[in-house]
Length: 327
Image (cartoon, rainbow, N blue to C red; front, side, top):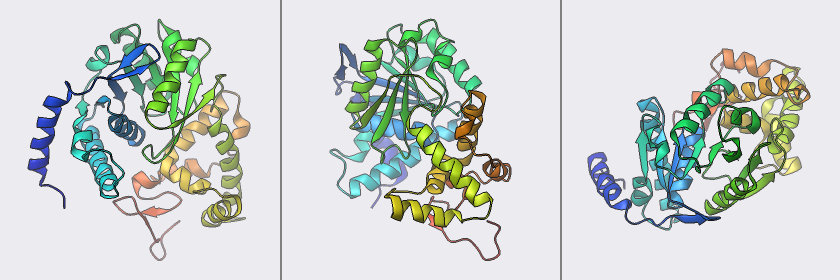
């Protein structure tokens, strides 16, 4: 049974007050890391915040919209409660949640030891954030981006210290996925790159080292090639999304099919990744069909919107389509 909201809030406040003196931080290379700033409290940002808190980092989760951080904290609490009920947490979920502090601006950037940008997959937005973070943060603080397709070197161009910029591409849902790509930009220093590898390992995740900065990195280029063909087949009426997903699960051992993965990631994100690939000379990895763009224009963004290639309840669970409902 869950505690009443007021009682939980009171307990979290008390835990937050005492948390600062409990954590000694973790040594990554020669640098002790205690505090992490996550910029962007959406699906990916909230997941990164959760696993960082579970790894005993003090986490500042920032978004300019308070409603988004409020929702993120609520979803993180729900996730932690589920993990605790299954015996998968090594400490009370309240203590983990108490390590996460919502923020409305970037002012904490100067205080933290590690910064991860997880904003919307829009290059101009990310470049603007990196410009500001570069000015506020300490010179030795690594600046990581969770971009899934934009070259790290392009984002680093807006900073005075491109050697401290790297990619940490998490996969969602972050608490359940064990993989993170660590991406080296053209000017990323070897020390910062190795710190990125160590940070990923400190979260209990497996790093894939991407030694060369290319659009889409490694995993998304492979997935994009599969999704490109899958989308074209569905749009041509050759197969349904459901049959393609079943085929990839049962025939090739995927845990989830390409359309299930796309719905989880957000079809708007998939569309932007395709646009980025085309703009950066990797158009052969983007669908020739505009099916995903059409779905986005109809508001069918995937799980987060309740509809995508599949239909979802308000809790995000798959539910059957209604009779006569347009698929």
